[in-house]
Image 1 (cartoon, rainbow, N blue to C red):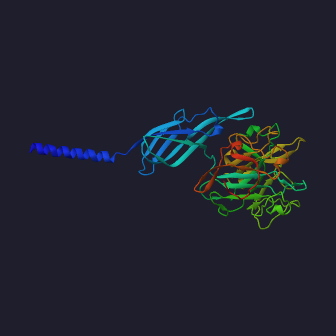
Image 2 (cartoon, rainbow, N blue to C red):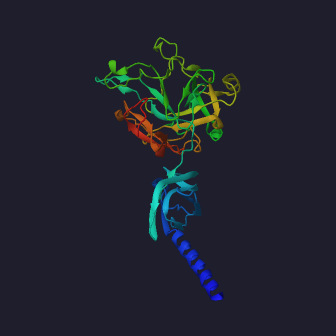
Length: 399
């Protein structure tokens, strides 16, 4: 009887062991190669960036960090995985003779990777995550155009502002400003305050009560000088009849399109009309005052001493109130910045002060597409973020 009982126990153990063998999940040695964005150069390595492997079947996660060679290895169950790599890195940018150090957030995601076999290799390229998840300039058209006869045409200028976030934003109260400083000047008279303030020579604001003008994620609004189809009068121009707003200066030289809402004109240095600098020697900002516009205007006025000894009025905008900023200039003429390097590390040009600039814009680069929504690049470095001297596409959102 003892012998029979012993045989029975051994049979149970063998059956259990057999069942355990049947339930064993095959394992794979995963090797992941991580590469940094090209603009970061060769002196930065991905060491220390976080890696998360998410098994889409059972929800299990495996985490770790990248080594100095850009490699991450882990032994995982065979299956389908989402692979996320993220973290922060410092790198040095060279702008002319100057070097700037900046910290950026890096991220990369690869989805639905089928990991199988005893050894499996994959790679992932990282990109610099947007610094802004709010409003950004999508296009800046400051140069104007030329008619087929070669005459200058300046009333077709516009700015396009884009909702780079994943939620509805209200355009009410958003303002734009243009730098008092000109980048072709070797002296910025406001340099002593550049790390705290941006000095503007004009302010126009989108009207509304706070919920009048909703803008969906991945959509934009166009602010035009004159909101008409300019191609009717100038074949080399652009159709702005679909613009959302226009700036109007209530002057004999300006045209008001009654069907299109006007921006609120809070301040302008010009006694007649404002037109953006047609060589692109200015900086532009999107901002929203922390307090009311009335309070801002009362507390932010500064005086500028002119060459002939007179004074003129300008306004300072706290850098903390600026939602997006773009420095413009040209390679042949750029001498000094109007923006803090923290707002824009470098600058972007449209042409090089020559006729190539006419009828062209600077347009922000597409960084990625998530669920059909375009996310524009915003590293606070316009030389990286923008395409230079390209055809205008107001209101057209495409890859």
